[in-house]
Image 1 (cartoon, rainbow, N blue to C red):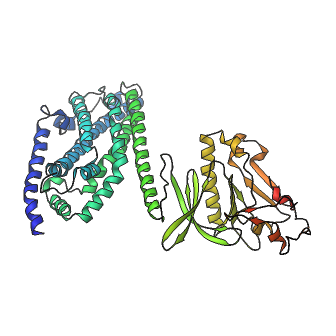
Image 2 (tube, rainbow, N blue to C red):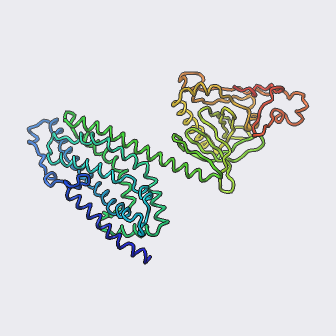
Image 3 (tube, rainbow, N blue to C red):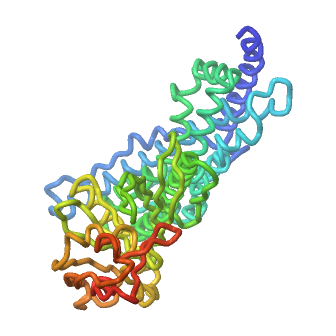
Length: 484
């Protein structure tokens, strides 16, 4: 620790120098407009918005003047919050980014350039964008009047804020890198502790600094929306504000999608680490939906499995000694879900019918069963909606006598089974094929055949090497063998 303290002294000096530099840039905006930091003009905080006496104007005019007065206050709030936001970003850069970058490659290095990039992303570019926004807002506020425009400033600057998308995509990486470096690098931990003691850090933690850009765009949208609501429709700035709102909402949506994508990617990377051997679930458009236990009925036994639902595939695995072993992947684009009624032996059953195999599963409770069915059908319906050609492709998918189908079927003889096919529903919303009913007729007596020396149920199936069940059409005439 003594050695680390010695390293902290020159770093403290570097941090002070960097903060002083950013403060000087703030104080001289004409010399460095991209780093401008301003304060609210004193005279704006004392603007007299009083009008003629209320008796001399009608109610409609009083309401308009009230909205204008509130609009002026919102404009000042926009200016002040932008100023404080940029101040905090400059503290982040002056207190952390620049001092750490200055010693990269030296004997005093604490973190490398790659780690710095992962933690701080493109925050220095964001400061430049928002500083330009602040500069333009300040110019408008210096010449403020009831008809002054600021909506056009946001409207013109909105395209530049697309850079926030990159920051959003990197945000989880930043937090993970910060956490890993803090735990595994004592020099960095000492540096962070030292930085927290500097008075100019605005009493904010590193996490508070890093989340500020994520919070800023929603804040701008709230302020612009408030500004629009208190701007008369005949005001020259009304359309500008509406256009700016749409553009910033579009950018914010992209940022949120980036964050969700990063969260999803991180989730799948963590998921793959839980599997033994090499598995790869990462695909550009793939999203993780849910996971959980289901029991799978096979030809010979019932197996407790763990299932993983994605937006395009349904994966199942066995857990052995703390790790999952991948056993199968079911494509959802040509699959449909079949609800099975309860029997005396099994309850909460349903089937996943795919091109190559039919999987019979059962859940531990009715609510859990229908959660799985609903989530599976929701993903299938989305796939069909995105690719309508799947409707025709899915029409050829039939129930196959596999995966333990015969065990529950023996208790369902003479009953009817209904299932919902999203593809059929989407092909024709009024079609009778939305819900299909299958009548399962009782099987005929077991034929006199040398092969049927055991029970009737056994004689109706033969097993192949991949543990699936196929019917033998040469001697089985049961109508259930040719369902659909």
